[in-house]
Amino acid sequence: MATLPVDRAFIDLLESTGVWSPNCPLSIERLVNIEISYCDFEGEIRDDGLITVMDVLAESVERVFKELLELRFPVDKIRSMHHYLGNDELSMDDNNSSCFNSRSIAGTDTFSIHSYGAAIDINPLQNPYLQIDEENGMVKVNPSKGWSYLNRRNRKVGMVEEIVPVFARHGFVVWGGTWTTPVDYHHFQLPRFMAELLASIAPDEGCTLLSQYMEVCHDLKDDLKAEALLGVRAADPESFRHIFAELICASV
Picture 1: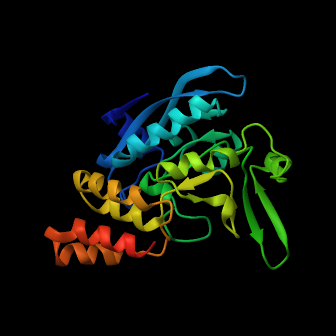
Picture 2: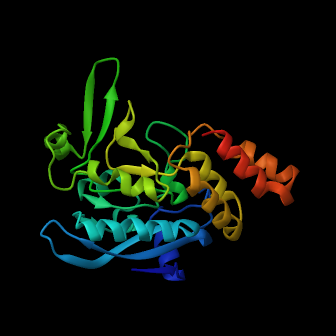
């Protein structure tokens, strides 16, 4: 596996397909590509995976996929979202695993954590996204063929329950499979405050803060606000790293 800066040709692809646009909360210079080796559903090792992530998360993402490879956990494919013109439904229908894609959360104006390169989707077919119609008690399954994986007690190859601890060990402590509505079995992410904070500061400082976060991330509650933390940083930039450590430890 190797981490590579995005080149001009790749940037053009992201921009022309709408995967990145100027209103994205993460600057395009903060993106890196990781070449991924993975085990497919036939048990073969493939070296054609490519995933785009926030720069400071590259090492964590590499570690996640190295563990998945060691476990021989099957992944169908790992392709950049420009292959799907940034269309999440097309990517899900193709059972594609991915990370960066600048878009809003369905039905809202809030940026998805994918827009920060801080969320990873794994095998959407085996781990579908469920949209709940609360008023009528109906459920829409995305991708539609994922209906045969709705019984999560009936464990099948490619279902993610066994690898939830792998993602958590490397900071991706939020799993969409625990949500009430929607339920997003294929989705793993950093807490929102952490993704927003890392996107708002320089990479070198981000690496330091990420290390502090990793020490407590398993017990951390997702109720901190990046806005408040950035206010603290603006008021006392010299002491911010120490203050940040105290704040995240106090929230555990």
